Image (cartoon, rainbow, N blue to C red; front, side):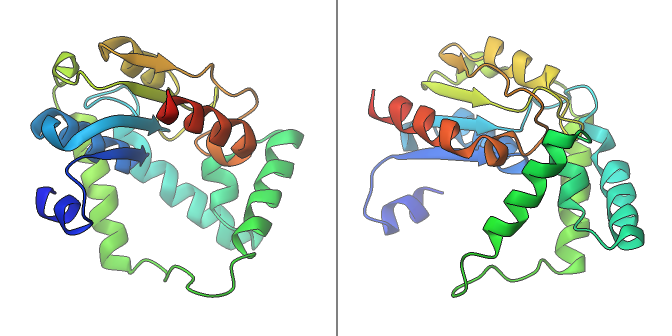
Length: 194
């Protein structure tokens, strides 16, 4: 990580981790604190958090449901099954189409399996000592996250010495920051500039 940050011309960086990226951000901030200024953790939780080990089963069910209903599985994984959640999911999927150049490539099946395996292992790990992460940390999530249950967000914010919890976004799941993107971006910018 140090080589990457230095290659970008920086001595330290602000890190934003969503979901599995939040797991990685916690590890980096704990093991290489000199590289980090501030962290933002969204849709994520601490190692061993309740329900994190169930992501593989949830993902498989959502993928099958998506195939059977001809819908994107993100609709089922990231958003609530309410009218507001379904509407927010459709709007998010439309926003993803706005960028026509330099689009992300689809994940390979082997990478997808490796990701699910890593998430499962994170969910089974013993809880880490988060008191070692002394960086200012903004923690956000939807109030109804099924993938990384929202109780993990509350636990994470409470266990970080400088954790600041964004009130859980209402009627939002794992994609809470996508559903409440304008509000989240404003909060993130204010946090990074303070």
